[in-house]
Figure 1: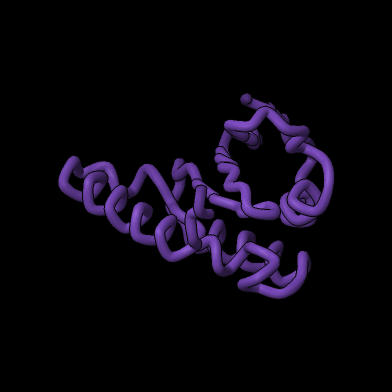
Figure 2: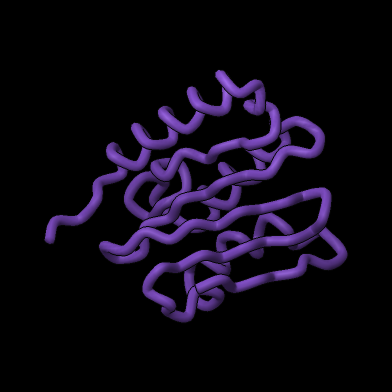
Length: 122
């Protein structure tokens, strides 16, 4: 089985954006491009954290954010709901998601926030 590329995920994001736009729901969801947050694209966790924070600052009130992340040939999805201070980690392989580099990247974004509820969904 071949790995799903970042380009493929970006095309899927583009498709979802189009569906949301037709449904007049585009303001509800914000996407973060995987090349801005992944180790291959951005180069290091600090740059990934900055990219997430910048995207969230540019978002609209009430918007949730989808962050696809590739961890060693494996895609995971993180959904951030800023207004509810909640982060959802979704991993179809049910690995321990909320540890390691990705957790550190997301934690850096919210270091200044009071409390973030972290929910692991497998």
